[in-house]
Image (cartoon, rainbow, N blue to C red; front, side, top):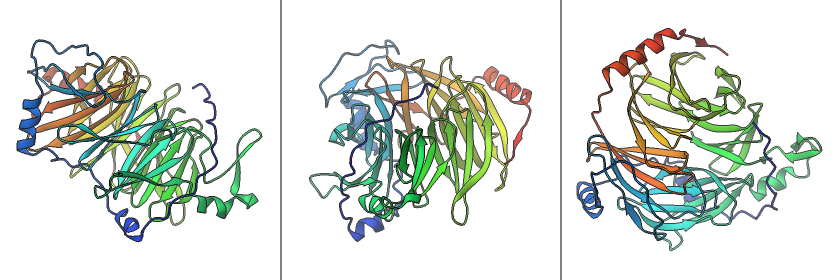
Length: 435
């Protein structure tokens, strides 16, 4: 992986004081609403958007910034509902935040799209540095930027400024508490020293779990931020190359890196420690990692630059994971990954979206491929809708567009594919990874 130049540093701006009621709200998780579409609104959305069943391949022209463009529909599999264009740069991240779909771009802006009609509600964050990742929790939106800062936005429908910047991490208070202490500095590169509470390079990923925010960076570190007071608690030298993705579930933090490793971390009494290494594959950059949790257990999936998606089942609560699948998902690198129920979606540099049915064993069976993007698919999100008995899939790409798809429930994977998947899984040695 080629070295990335350090982003230009800015003097930290003073953080705004946060009301007590806002701190209390931040402890409440803000989860995507799986039933954001009512029966009436879904009908109105469908009727307001015209479809054509002539073809599933299309090319679309530029449209005004706040216009939703209708796309053709493929009746036998999925529906291409709309394409949203409002970013000057490539779409780098998507996040579901209550009634909003949030999208960020390399053009340094964040757009909030209001559901169900997906009209632009607000634009914020412009000029704060290229946005690499988004996460939402407890009435707050966290954005990760190329300048090495995490910015915190308060969400309020009672104000004209619905998304208001309230802090930038590390906060000024955190800086003042450490800047005069020699022990607070660490060497990041030759002749370069930084405070351990700040990232020395672009922040690539975020995850919110158990009252803390985890940020992963190209500087090879994971940092832990307490949501209640926005203080940096810990810096973990996690990998030997850039960290591309982070996910958290049930007290375990998973990090995926360009160094070919996917690692699991657990919180000890004071600090996090390495709980296990799920995979080590030379020459592969792991670009995405997600956790699928249900009553049957927990599966971890990672997507690599070699086009493979690898899955593991966690064995009990110990430091053991058994290999569930290792499938060749795309001809080119898999850049993003998401899970909604038993549907797994993969986005690739080959401009396609793969749809996979998650098996009881944790394996994956291909059920379809979505084409439509004119560039690599960089980010993807999905949410189940009980009213329509299907899944809404949102994808963002380097073609500067966000595309919205409806995937029906009850897909049956091809029997031959299922048998081949089972055979491929059996051919793999059932490895158990230990710390």
